[in-house]
Length: 449
Ligand SMILES: *Cc1c(COP(=O)(O)O)cnc(C)c1O
Image (cartoon, rainbow, N blue to C red; front, side):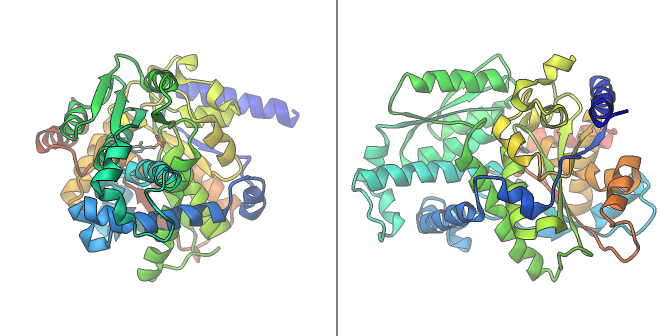
């Protein structure tokens, strides 16, 4: 059989499994050596450094606007935490027999200001827009302390602009909170799965919330069309934004320092496996892009999606990216993982990630609640369902046929290899207590309603 026929056969098998909502691990055969792959991408490490430098410039202003950032001098960052108890639970639950390494949580569920991974990209893009406006309109000079932007005349100026976005919830929350804090008018178009509490919280910040009966892709389209009619309306385009992407990528540089502080080495014999919940792809894609720059071939990144919304996996495996949707294969895009309820992936992220990503997997709905329960009971973490998507990752690699073969191919199955697994927990600290108790109740019953 020639290679093309074999590939299409495999894709057909994969699609039948996705259709049947069976959990799968898809390994990306187009992954290339990191250095070579990164050279083929037009954005570079300098772009990530530029984003990082911009966040430093804004830090004094953020510390002024958000009291909770006082202790970090205005930097929005999360902890990297060893979770030995959670590791034992996951190993036991999934029958991982041998010492498969260390497990850490990258705790973006508790990122300040927005309570989710969206605090990285979303806040960054609004800051970049505000900086551009302020520099062009002589409200700020490059050597100024950015605290100047909290002056009434700056806020007054920003209030003639609207910042708008389409979201399943968390991006809206992040953009809405930062844009309103700077004085912008703000419009958030929410898709049907957006939780009431997220809308309520935004309205309390003075944000206009426009509710849609349709899914995320349609809400984004509505927001885009609406913004096009108004030259003073800046649209944050979650499907195509390089600024969001680069804001997320900065996380990789911070992670490098945190690993060093924990005394964890990363190299060929001590690889890093990172599991990232994926919706449209911007957050996990930006983080992966950053990690590949920082750790090269020693980092292996996997995306996680619910069985009802495996859009990035489908786009990558078929090579059709944004031109394919989960509806095309008969799936319904219904999931309690509101942060991941995306029917068609970002094309630009998929294309950039094609040579960098190690693979992607899907997980069943009920597992999220069991994981959420375990994370709270064992480690005291407060997660939303989406944020547990990373938890199945290590077991896929260590126990499935496809995972073991990936390790063998990469010469990582010997006893001397020490893997560090990072579960990226992407949201949850803002979930109201009554909703969280309901998630816990479901989790205690094995994820059932
Ligand atoms: C948005 C989100 C993600 C995924 O980010 P994308 O950029 O949509 O891929 C993961 N987890 C949570 C909790 C989110 O809100």
